[in-house]
Image (cartoon, rainbow, N blue to C red; front, side):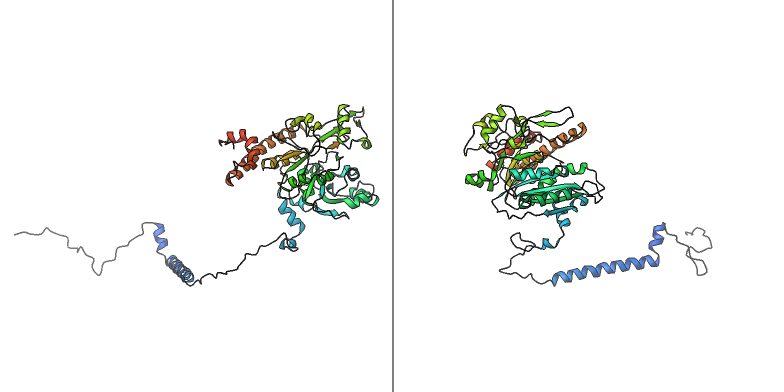
Length: 451
């Protein structure tokens, strides 16, 4: 008979008198989760999520059907054709800061449009001369009104004026000039920029492209003559040329650019370093025949901005025999081309303000966008040659050159992409971009398809 092995007298199961074993959590996280406050917070969070979800579901299901209006018209926040706009409620400094985003508020806050407003009321088809004047060259205003009979939009950028007796105050000199010259009061609008005292004088010279945009923007006619502030004068009646040939005005309305070839008066340097012009201001040629004679006598030379660096753009021999209504178009464009031009005030690209003083950048973007450049056969500008060029260091020249090279590539890619996106790459409007940007686009791996 089987007999169970001998066992201990102690029972395997706990008895009523025995103490219960102690169970310990395997980790500190477990002890935290088992605490009553944490469990209360978790339960409250779950309840909140459930109620929040239920609320959104009920809101979505109870959402009414949208009301459809048969004759509903979306109202614009502004309308340029209306006399009132909500933009009118904004201050001038806010509007200007939005327009010129490349400049800090201490510049845009100190712009005063129409600081002096002329007494004339230009007509839409008038051509306004848009330029900028430095505080040390106020006498150029008097020279401009003697040579140009139409409206003038001029930007004057000065240092912070001082009221101290004996100091140079350009505003007082400007006021004296306007009081004594009725032509200035009749023709010239002055838009004032005051440089804060915390800025150095070089700031004035570094805002030339801003000056060009301001002078053009505040012109009160539909067309502008962009004249560089280097002492150049429009010695011919440009406005009369466009009135005599209405077909030119039609080209101008459609977004074309008209070029005024530039010339310089020959100068000699004195022992003191001054410049003596070969022709006095009163003897400057005012017609093409006299100009060609002066060029032959070498008292007038070709301007580098139009001819020498851009010999492919405008051929002097061809221009010399060009007469009447015959216009010559620029075919092979040079990115450094920077003469005076006549353009529309609106619906044209503006000068890139990343550059301090680079008119060539303004015209290059116009060319890539599809604008045709036409050389006027009988009109031109002449630089008196009495002002020295602003001297810049070799380092600044290197920076400007490299920056403009990058700008050339960027502009090519930007306009090429725009033409591709609009399906106009093979159109006649894109031919300037196709021709001028072949090397740039090839480097970036884009295939050029000739139309």
